[in-house]
Image 1 (cartoon, rainbow, N blue to C red):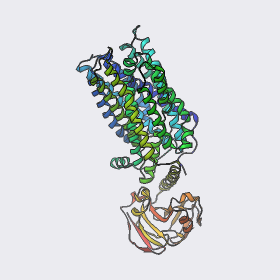
Image 2: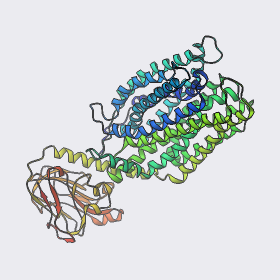
Image 3: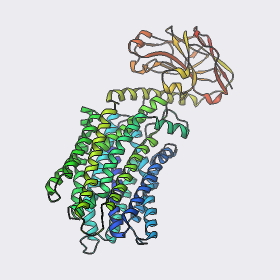
Image 4: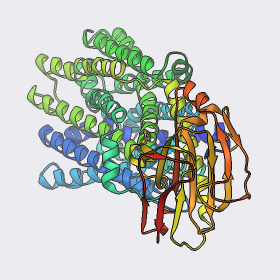
Length: 617
């Protein structure tokens, strides 16, 4: 009863994590050094840089949901998401290098070139990274495997950041012809090295990552429905809020930390140390995320880690610029509790599963893109506002800064992010309530519905010619319109059109002459093909897969020929009621596209074998 036939190998998990390592080679270098490259090397005004950052990131951020919707509607021999990793990564590598070129100087042409290359790099990062991020939710249905995948991704991200943050300054200086600070050539060559190294890693991810989770609704979902389900997904919106706060703090801090190190602490080489320490801590903490989440739950671990990160930055903020030891300790605390990224990624997958159960629509790509939108907006707001405040505080490149400017830099690099991390912790702790137990139940019900869809698709492959037909009531009881059933997937018609009955009998009868094409081992689902070609699904109760066959009896098997009104099986309504489940009986026509009209002709109280539904070509 699952799309996933076997456990993920450790190798495939490691290779998936390597994808974020490759992403950091191109994007962490851009995020960490591009701002100071623009102001101190190219000579662009801070206000111009702020505008470029804000416009580029907001524009790119709103491209994320579009990319997600495009990806999840893609059909190729490689799947929905993998082709974008294969074909997009070479162009991402090219433009990540072009951002570190300034052929037109610091005038209007230089500003235009910077805006063009930066926007293109961001769009290409979206093209590759949105599908890559969505892969975790479709590589496995197992919650622990998803946690592990995202833990490996976090390790890959942090290892990539360690490499970039520890090696970038030495590499840049090595290519800067003896200068004490990096030159234009140093920036360019470093970007080129990272771009070249990233490509074989991206290709390896494409080769090893496989999709196994298929949506319940196999047909194309209208764009309007996708957007409605994303915006209406309260848990995705909670994650969006957490990430907005966290990424405004985290990405905004990365964009301007170089200024803090150079102009407050007085050392270009310290950039590598202070940017590497949190990444090392993040890589180490990733090893403990899975057991911690298993022991305490996502909500508690996420909220606690965000709170402690905020406290670490407060320690840095209140440290004297000469107290390097205390500043390092604050960065260590900030780094070792950097658990928010992998946990929130798993929460996105949870929110997708929740919404699929509620609506029948699975929005992996769009949901992850919404997560990416929060990241991009946070990056835009944090980075752009930070650079703008630098200008307001009197920042001037390549000269000693005033005391007030130094305090302003300290405030926007450390105090403001600390407050935002604490706010994110509050949102996580008081608003997220999808527990592990609740997710287990959601996964159980989803697997049941996916298996139903799979059986329907298999049976539909051999459909017969259609003629007008009438279906009978398989049980006696009260007629229930399908849209009134207390299950959004069934009520939406995602699995077919038909009717339901609130039963007052326990014997299940065939609604038409035909052949039994499938009987679930648990006895709660039957598939029939009528002699006139209708594909029928009968589902006994809601959530009754959880009973594992208790209370159900089968009197037919696959391949049996049955007559209308012949017994198919029986079910114990008391067992279903004692389990707290709904015993409603659903009768669905799954090959609805072959009919012009499927119409109930009765309502109210029904006797067994009463005429209920007409099918017209």
